[in-house]
Structures are given as C-alpha cells and as structure tokens.
Figure 1 (cartoon, rainbow, N blue to C red):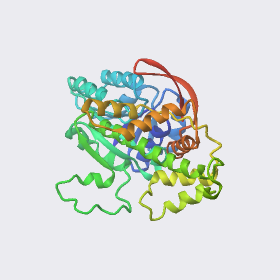
Figure 2 (cartoon, rainbow, N blue to C red; figure 1 turned 90 degrees about the vertical axis):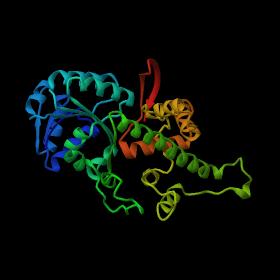
Figure 3 (tube, one colour; figure 1 turned 30 degrees about the vertical axis):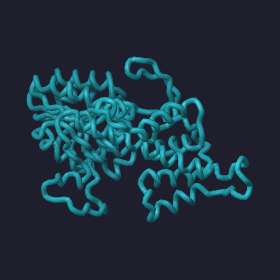
Figure 4 (cartoon, rainbow, N blue to C red; figure 1 turned 180 degrees about the vertical axis):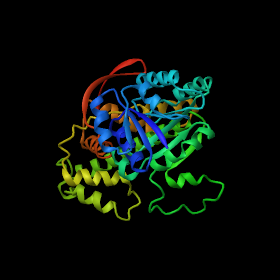
Length: 342
C-alpha cells in the first residue's frame, strides 16, 4: 500500500521505516530536507517529497497521508493544507496527540469535502520501530478498513502475550494484535488521552515507592530502623513474578542499573497535554480521578523542587520515548507556561 508521511521526527521517521520494512511504499516529507534524506536512506521503499503538493502528487488515489506533528496549530495547518490538495475519497490520518475535540471538528469539516479523517492515538515511543505501536483509532469504518494493511504493519501483533480468557467472537480480534477501531473521529485520541493519564498515575506510583525506599536510610529515622536498600536490585527482582511488574518497571530497572543515583536527571518533569485533557474530561463527566490529578500536579511541582522520585520519572520518560530535559516556554490553552520538557 502507498502512504505519505508528514513529520519525520523520532516517531514519524520510525513509522516510515517500519512501514517500508513491511512492504509499503512511503512518500516522505518534512520541512527539514536533511531529515527527509536521513529517513529516505533508512526506508528502502520510500520516495522524498519537496513539499506537500509534491507529496500528494506522488500518491495514487485514494490518497492516504499520515500526519505526525505536534498537537495544535502546526497539525491544524497541515490538515488544512492537505484538504486543499486532496480529493473526495482520500484519507488524512493524524497520528499525533491532538485534542479529541479538535478531531471531531476536523472530521466534520473534511467530510463536507468527502475526505475521510482518521485519528490514531499511537503508543510505543522510540521502541516502536522494533516492538510495534499500540494504536487506538477513530474514524469511519470505511476509512479504517481501507488503511488496515498500514495499521497491521505498524501494530506489534499478538506476540507472546497470552490470550485473555473469556474473549468471545463478538469482541474485535484486532485488539489482540495491538490496534483497535474505537469509534468515530475523535474516539481514538480520546482513548489515547486517557491512556496517557493512566500512564502518569502508574509512573508516579513507581516514583513515590522508590523514593520511600531510598529514604529509609535517612538519618532522621531511628538508627535501628534504617535500611540501606539497593534500588537497582529491588527494581530487578520486582520484574520477575511480581504483581507490579510492567514495561515501565523494566525501564526503571534499566535506568537504575546504569546510574542508581539518577544524577543525570534534574527531576523536572513535563506534561505533554494529555494528562490535563484527561482531568478536564473527568470534570465534564463528574468522574473522580484523585490519583491521575495528583500525578499531574506532582509534575507541576517537580519544576520548582525536585526529589528522587521526579528524577525517576524523567529517567522513565527518556527510556521509553527519548524525551530529554529542556527548558522552554510554551503556550498552553491560551496562556504562557514556563516548563521543562523531560
């Protein structure tokens, strides 16, 4: 199958390479021509485009374009530009982390032109090239079915995960392959948004637990009740047979094995937006989410006063997504917010 990919950063580039490896023809575009060249060298079944118009011209109908850009204005601009270049029956996919209400608006607007809009919540980070990507998809059945070969190639597959007992024929078999058509436009990013909110809570629980254990040697405690615990070994033993084992714990173990003090991290932890949107959705639905809310607020606090737990959060984010700690100022929901990307 042929597809165009716009935005060739860590995930966009790896998605392009994985699709090429699985026999799909990929037309590449990024505003940085050097990035296009690098991905083109890695993806054998690929062609480089010099702009959006050139990319669309290189695609056969019905044309499919995957947009992998940061949420917000830059994605909206790309979708608007594509809408002017594409035709009835074509498909625009947003594989980034857009706000689901924006997806609903885009889907309705594009439908007026007969263009299908599909939102794909994509989880897998920098490991997705080899492991595959877990995907939560929103859009019409017609469009999602058409791009199924693309989704199947990107998904991790069943692998060695034991089938869930009791799953009947009425349930979607694609979920067992690591991708799911959740519903209409917006539903994919909504499910991914909540996924990220849960991720915040899980990461915070690990961070707090390890912080408690690390501080058990504190001189503020009664001398006979102090323990000098090895964080790397505890993370390792929990990976094997424990009810709290997970991929996030694997990443903790990896980070602690390399540097148990986590001195490479400041502990200033960013939030990319999905956690905030999850809390907003909970408020709209009157659903209490104390754990997710506390995890988000802890990230806010981390930017002013960092402890060992927040350093572990930074370490996990770097391990699974290659996220480095950078000071920057961003606009969020119309206001200026000074934060640290980690």
